[in-house]
Length: 177
Image (cartoon, rainbow, N blue to C red; front, side, top):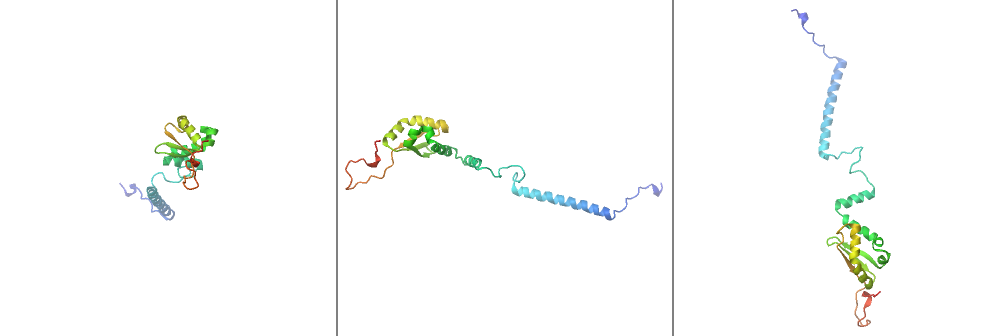
């Protein structure tokens, strides 16, 4: 065999070829650094917290859905529903009854709705209607939301005793009308 049968060695890269090889190596190194940096950022942020073009939980939202989300997250469904009933009281109990008594507060722990009437006669009437009112409220709010309707008479000033009072007078605490 002669020396001419050996495969020729490729020529040494020169000028432009060296520049291409160096550019390719620099691009690969930059890509590797970028991927490592991206992984570090994602590890710091946690999964799924990247901002992007698609909607996510951090985007601004209208006030109504934001309040509904807050009510659900905090577990305020029942107090919010009862508050809505207080706003719709005339539609639930009727105009005549709504003119004479108003809901004052709701005790969530004991599920008691406190109602204040403007006279003792109306307070007695509402006490007689309490089972029907509780049923109507529970239809609107959900079964068991209101367990008891506590009816209060008119709120008057504290009774004062003194020389200008006639003994035995009933005062503002009893209105009979």
